[in-house]
Length: 280
Image 1 (tube, helix red, strand yellow):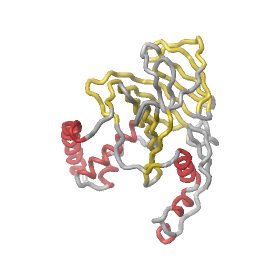
Image 2: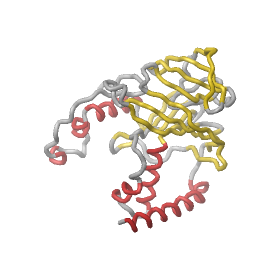
Image 3: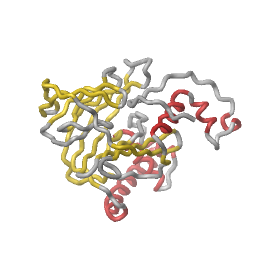
């Protein structure tokens, strides 16, 4: 088994090298990132246990026209899985190769000014299905304050805004005059390097900024079910609060398939954006 894993790792490295050579020929790219910002994120999985935090490493790739924000950990795991499957491997091999990467289960991607200027595209995975919705790129109404501090060697200024149902405190730097930031946050006269909501349920803080020597494509890969934001919210909420009910609602899942499912304790769903699910 160890020999198989070592062989698979070497083959995946070769696959990535070949893929990078073919990439420019095989994809119709909308933009490419020239700056990459890395954030650490502390986030709560349950509003009932706000002090029990989860952790992730997030990436913001910034291009001339658009940007992409996603979990670095989940992206690495997905790359490993895709490579294993392309090479004829199975899920057990993919799981073994990705075993050392901590899971966050944050599958969402946020694309700003995509597919066109002034639009935002959001993708996420709910169990077996991947979903996508588009909405206008909303800019928070920020209040700029005089308070300042240094983050990663950049002089930053404080700003406050109520946005998507939460109150945010952000620190931005005009030394990088790019109006972008983590998640859906944007609209300041500089890059947001730190952002936390008033309940401390979500906190993004920059741990690295680098200018890319080789540009990274910004595009949406894979097949997605187009839906409304409310529909995706409702599905994610149901999955998180009542897995059994969600499985029973799926057309290809039957009672016989589920067998004697044990009742799972109900829990409250929490999301960065506060809204209600779509009415049936």
